[in-house]
Image (cartoon, rainbow, N blue to C red; front, side, top):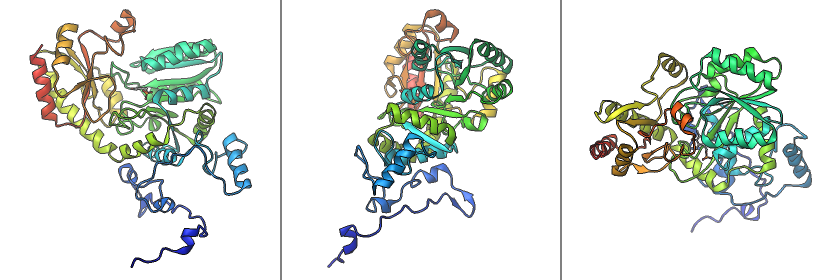
Length: 436
Ligand SMILES: *Cc1c(COP(=O)(O)O)cnc(C)c1O
């Protein structure tokens, strides 16, 4: 006969169990992110011994007593620094979101991380936190199209202006733009995206940070960077002077093309401000997607490493193909300066690149339509290989002149390599090139 369960447990009279302290080091040696992804931030004892966190589908949380409720709200409203100590209401926080936030922060050694309902809601929440009417945003260009719309058209309606510098800008060129911005108004933020999409040009984050530190006294504008393309494995911008990293977790972090999510990482001081905005406007991630992201993060390093290795092999093969004009891939820097930025900032070249075919739209379309393994879709960073045509799809509304400046030609194909077998993918590209 099985043992009778402990009576006290059934009646709930045992004292509430507290989480066990996390194991984050052994013999003074910090555990690596890939190890911590399996258990960090979750104690099975708090969830009936479940090895994996359940999905907490609840809109609100029960307080132990009235005084605890008051304390929580003091934290949520900012009356007491440090945020809510417990769970309050699902627009503010939830167990699945808190676990995934703890784990996300590990990858970039960030003090705190926050999750959002999409990459764009993360970016919008961060912008709303720091920007007010009359302010100027300095940004690298080009940015993700929706981010440009948000800064230029939407914040523009509220009297915010912007000035940009090309992603490849030198320290001197960045300085000149910041100087001009300071004359225009209060510089509230320096916003970067590296590598730029679809040009794959890297921004010199170290130079931007040096310029910011030299040109502002007292309260300096935060440097915010969209790290969707290389993070969190191949680029850690906080180490190079950025203050806040934002993410579309929809891409590599989610990694299976089955969820939409966003993230923001940084110091506790910055994240406290962003959290207050998120609490107010309700841009937090939902528990189900948070739970899916927990699965994703367990294999993040495996997936990204494999995709990166595949991309290197495939780009090396494509580069010399007679029907290919050029391959714009971080592993083949086009200038010495880009090579220098790459060497100082990145530990890998990613798996998203631009393929320029000999010819124009007809040749590009023939190639895309002939692909058998790679799927025709926008987005990137998933387990499967995707291909798209920026000029006719993601960047269709970009004016012709700007398209030309960004080298978004009719012969350009954007490819995100997945974790399939590299030789199978090469065979697919080979037969699709033959079909042109
Ligand atoms: C996809 C993407 C975004 C937007 O993220 P969503 O999750 O689609 O809202 C922002 N920045 C970059 C670089 C992206 O690739």
